[in-house]
Image (cartoon, rainbow, N blue to C red; front, side):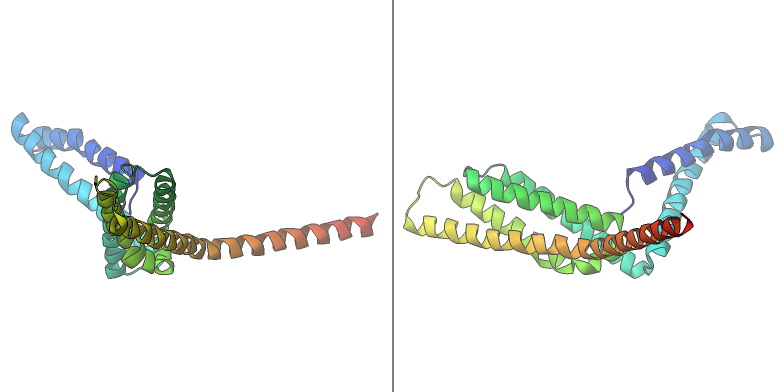
Length: 213
């Protein structure tokens, strides 16, 4: 759940330790250059993981998550990204234009949901069913749909199976749209409250100005 900026910060911080460690090792402890370089490499690795642990701790604290909750959500995000990669590998091979549009929209929704939860891990609990059911089911069905759509034989049974799969994927698309709305519901409500506050403040200011006039 840590983003690229966190990784860059870790590397930069750890990288700074290399010349410092070499200088201390060579001049304070009279160690040779290669020994000092080896020590600095160890310090670099240790520093990297210490900073990573500190960043993870800060993020857990920010969103009020326990260590086990954070680790569970992180694991679910990793699985979701893997399902999304599998999904993306397959949907582009679907030959039907309508099928492609449908799967493209599902991919877009899935990316958005994953991105929101990655930024705010506490929101995971507002979209658990997406991670446990909707996305994995979409990936699995897309694999079967892609396989069937490529078959040279298109008899009645295959057409029926393809249509049923499309119908189920359409239902999943609606479910994923609901998942996204559920994730955004609290933000929308907060925005409404803030807008109401701004409007009330503006009205009070206008009345005050009128009274002074």
